[in-house]
Image 1 (tube, one colour):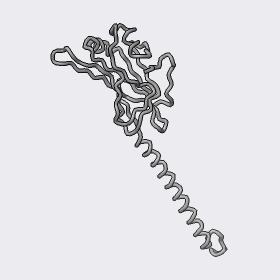
Image 2 (image 1 turned 120 degrees about the vertical axis):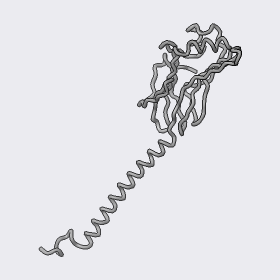
Image 3 (image 1 turned 180 degrees about the vertical axis):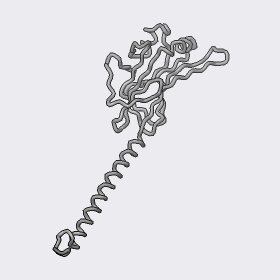
Image 4 (image 1 turned 90 degrees about the vertical axis):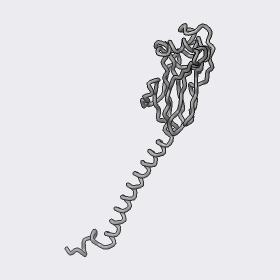
Length: 185
């Protein structure tokens, strides 16, 4: 059998095979490019939530403030799904309940902002608790080590993380909490 008689060696078939190979390579490159684009899109809106504490006293120790803050240092919005605030591992639903129930101060005089189920834009900060009464500032500072704050937040692509005051976010599949442990403010 001569080369001319083999069907796969015909010039038309060689051109056809070449077209198939080029098409398969183009599809592979296109799929790889789409994967890179998706990763870039997710990275361009990646939230990074930081929980911090701040306090300050005047020189004569007669004035000062104590506050907790939550800041998004990421590149995209953080969709906060839940907050959990507890004192000695006992969850509380409001700052007032936490302060009164744990004898931190008999009459809370604080400024509060909603943090649970909030949308935190990139480079934005919420201060969920600010105390400026010097006695309360001292008490909060004294009890600060016993107060735990945990947040679960997601990106707009549904990727979720759990973080606490150590600020080491851990990826989670979904943000879920028992209603009795959820912080309401």
